[in-house]
Amino acid sequence: MLKKLLKHEWVETWKIPTFMLVALLVITVLAGLGFSAPIWESEMTGLTILMILLWLVYYFALIAVSIGITIYLAYRFYKSMFTDEGYLTHTLPVTARQLLVSKILPMCAWSALASLAIILSVFIFGAMAYMFLEPSANVSLAEFVQELQRAMKEVFGLEGGTNFVISLIALMVVGVFSGTLTVTGSITIGQLVGKHKILGSIGAYFAIMIVMQTLSMMVMFPSMFRMTFTAEDNVFVVMAPMYYGISIISLIIAVLLYILSEFIVKRKLNLD
Image: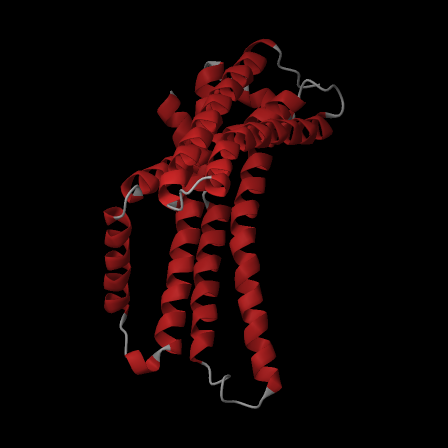
């Protein structure tokens, strides 16, 4: 039954996020092509302003994709779980765990896809800027990728470089789950606040974020102290433990939020 629920949820949610990601790709290419426009030698002020506006659109598109997909999926979760549509959802012959997992996993998948799309977008934009702004170097995309690979090998070869990259990847992976569960957990907790469920969800979200930020700062402080008051100047060596610590905190909070959400859906569900 869980597979059917996952398939249904994916079919119901894929259109809008896909549109956003495709739109980001199109805007990325257009913004990158702006570097090939003859604005640097041109005296046409209007062309320069147009290019700057295009780059601003690209910048806001990066933000809009991440926030937009999150808001859309949060609304979808709220609507299907805690509104009139929720009455039908909770009549299905499934457990609270199956129901939550069928909602959370697609949200995590879209969050991961959005993150990868943003990384790819920045890579494409940077590659196009480099190729168009360095015509004398006559650099192709393949050569740009090779240069990037050489740079990564140098990072892995430095002291703490490999550990830093692993900690960064761990932080990103955990962030996908913790970010999703922060949203779903906040919405679920908000349903306990009588007739002000949306305000309750917003309040719960900010409360959770304050707790996470406070704990993260406690983890970051030793690393910041080490960089400021010791002779350690290797950023990789200092940052890796901090990223691991933040990842562990985020993962613990995500697990606790899931347990609480399942308890509320199973025992404290209020659709009034």
